[in-house]
Length: 51
Image 1 (tube, rainbow, N blue to C red):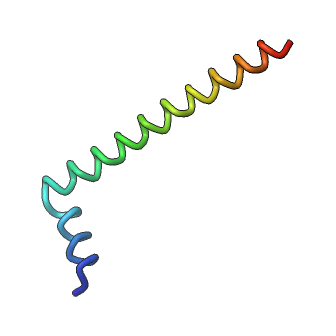
Image 2 (image 1 turned 30 degrees about the vertical axis):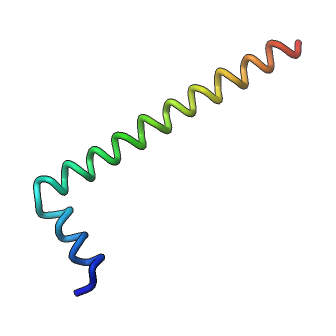
Image 3 (image 1 turned 60 degrees about the horizontal axis):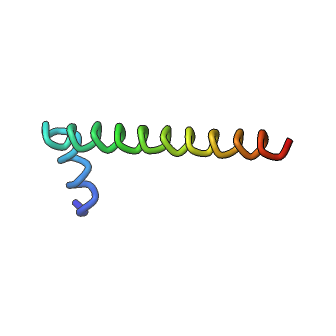
């Protein structure tokens, strides 16, 4: 078994691994939504500023 397979099994079977997966997913989801809001605000302010 390779190291990656062992790591996948750890994340799937242990409770701590599930917390890492869910926490990582939630972190990057929130981070992406924050950046999306920042780009929307910047885009709309440039549109309104140019008019």
